[in-house]
Structure formats: structure tokens, C-alpha cells
Length: 537
Image 1 (cartoon, rainbow, N blue to C red):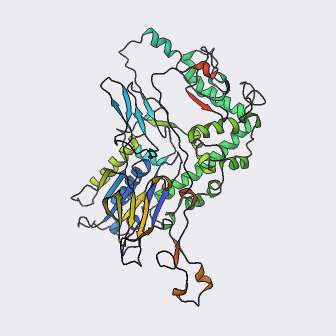
Image 2: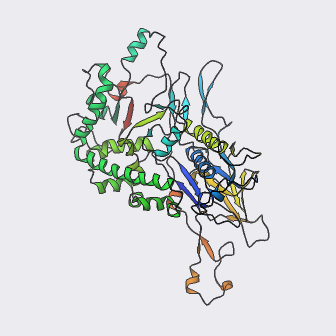
Image 3: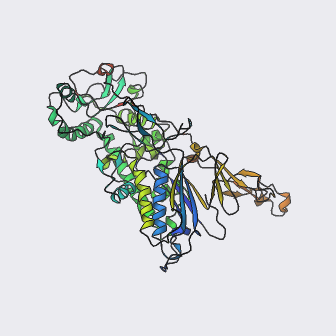
């Protein structure tokens, strides 16, 4: 949202909702990084005459937005350079952190005291337990094809180091000898994954592709070979159908990165996610459910795996019986990752969840939350090393505040935290789901003499009064006006801004041992490290 007088501004807010392979929201203003004015002129030395920008949300979207805005602004050309004086990031709370009690026990506590009970939670958040284990509360793996994240890591190699995907981060001290009990426990370290179908039945478990007769030291090597071969045999044609669709999606997303990097042509600036999907050929997928998308691919659905059916039938149950990719692996991953079934899941979101299968997967050593810290650190460094004039205030600032209201005036927008005014800004970026933000967006009425009279802000722009087309001969006083006294009405919000979110809860249990008998596993067989569940499971 932007309001600036005597300035032509085109604001684009790209918010990729629930897309694991593009965890960023970018607002790109042509007034800040447009294609015109090719002459490289020195930046204006006059301090505090540029734009003040507020970013609501300090998660992966908000911090990446700050980093790329700083990059566009500081490395622009001519009069399109160094136009931002302040980038203020507002967030209700930083990620959770570890607090040790006097007894040495680990507790989970928010740095906001207390955290609002309605707080949705960051998409990327990390918890470190007392024993050194790192738990990802949000996005746990990163795909090598996510060029935004990879580029960020390349810019901060000392602090952002790759580690195995979903690694606990716990490091063993080689100087400390293991006890007999620890050695015995190590023999049963869970490995691989399985799909539990309930009632002591498994659709897939490690023993299907890692027989117990194989020595433990060969597991890491053979798992990389046997697991892909097992799935290839188990799912046959459906495996190739989904893989082919994923390859097409990867190609489309590569085009998105090219468009984001092109700041010289106005055609590469988009007003909505749907415009992006149109440009890269993914709009049709974004407009249907994942269930319908899989129907279009021809992936078979197995009634034997419905809620009231047993796995011991035509599919599952025994490792030598071919499986059903859609009802087994695809359904289990959708339920466990998004807490939604195939009908609830958007087709594009569901497809993107499988994009990482075509590349390297990794996590950030010490926790993926470091990406957000690094984004702000790199944004600050960009300005410090640029030719932009030094200002009496720090350009990029973070504030622990819960934004409750945004009021748009004639030339600026004022932000409030309850009754406290946090200042006036030229541009406000909402780097969080609109339907979860619980923020009032209001505007002063241009026809009112009393500035205290406020109306809902037209977040998706306005459209002309439809009565105008059939009433050309009537005077404006005879036509129906909107609540602001204008011959226009607010356009409805797109579905992406109104669809309810489904909560995914991470429950951490420490100092516990897996009760394998509950799952119908024996003490001798390999236990899965990750347990997915089917609809019935």
C-alpha cells in the first residue's frame, strides 16, 4: 500500500502463500528502481528527504523484503538511487528462544511477555533444546533451486552453513567415550521414514527397503540406492507422471526468478500472484484443488485406503505388493506438512511441495531462523558500503510491536499499536497473510471536513460505479455514490487474501523413548525417524 503526492508510483506486493520453495515476499516500486533515467548521477546529499517504508511482519517474508529493497535502492541508477531513508520492520515477537531454569531444565518461552494468544507464528522458527538438539518449528528443509535463499547464503558464508536436511544440529564430542548404554541405544537410532496406516498397519516402513539383515554401517549408503529404486518399483507410471509435472513446475519457477531479477522493464512488475502465474503458465494449476490436479495427471485413487478400510488388500500392507502413490505418499505428505487433505490443498501449492525432489535438500546449521537474521544484516551492510549519504538515523530498524491499525491520509500512512502512534510512512508493506494479521486498514474520507471520520481502506483498489455506463445523461448528484462520496467502489479482495489458514501445530516432546509396540514395530527391525500418517492413521 502506498500513498505519495506528486509521485507516480506503481507498487507490487508479491506474496507467495504457503510455497516452501519460494519463501519471500517482495514489494518492488518502480519509483525506486524503475527503468527510466539511465544517466548515473550522484545520490542527493540531502539527508532525511527520502521515503519512509514500514514492513509489518519480521519473518522470512518481511526480512527478505527489506534485503531486496535495500539492494534495489542502494544499487540503483541516477535519480532512482538512495530514495529510502528508513526501513522499519515491525513484528510482535522475535522467534522463540531457549531459557534455562535454575534447575538446568529447558523451557520454551517467548521474548514477548506474554505472547498474544492469537499470534499465528512465524513460518520459519527454530528451537534449541537443552541437550543441543535443534528443532525446526516451521519450514525445516531448503531446496537448492530456491535461488533467493541460496543467494542469501552465498552472501553470508560465515554465518549460513549448510547441514543435512532436518539435522538435529547436535554434535558429539569425540573426546568423550560412550557408555555401554549409549552404544546400545545407538544401534537403534531411527532412520528413514514410514507411513503409518493405524491399527498396527504400515503402508511403508524402513524394513521394506532396508532389510534387517543388512549391517548397520551400510544403511546410509544403501538407503540412497535402495529407497529410490523401491519407490520407482512401487509406484511405477504414477511416479513418472508426477515427476514430469514437477519438472515443468521447476522450469516455470526458474522463469519467476528471471523476472524478479529484471528491474529494467516494467512488464516484469506484477500487481498480484495471479499475474505471475499467468506469466509463467501456472494460473490454471493455481485455480484448482490438488485433488483435481492429480485427476488431470491421471494418478489413480485407491478406495482400499479410505478411512474405514484396511491396508491389507490390493495396495500396501506387504512390501512386495505395488502401492498407490496418490493415496499413500502424496496424501500422507499433504496431511503431515499442511494439515489438509487433497481437496483443501491448492493445486499449485500441492505441486510445489514436490519440487524439492529434483534437487539438493539441506538446512541451515544451527537453525533456519538464521536466514532472517542474515537478511537484515546483509541489508544493513548494503547501505553501509554504498554511495548513499550517511543519515543521522539508522536506515534499517526493527521494532517489537504488534500493529493494530493503519490509517491512510492524503500524503502518508500512520501506523498504530493499540493507541500508540508509531509514525507516518510513505509506503506500508504487509509481509504476513492479510486474513491472519488482525489489522484494521482505514482511510480518511476526502469529502469529510473532519479527519477523525474514517472508512475502510480499498486494499484491492477501486472500480467505477457500474451505474455510470447506463446513465450518461444523469448528473453526478443523481448517481449512486460510495461511502466516500465518490463515483467508485472498492474492488473485492482476491481469494488468496480471504481464504482461511489451517493451523499446523508442532509438539515437542523431549527425554522420551518411542514406544514401538504402539505402532506394531518389533525391537529387531529398523525404526523410522520420520513417521507420516495416512488419513486413517
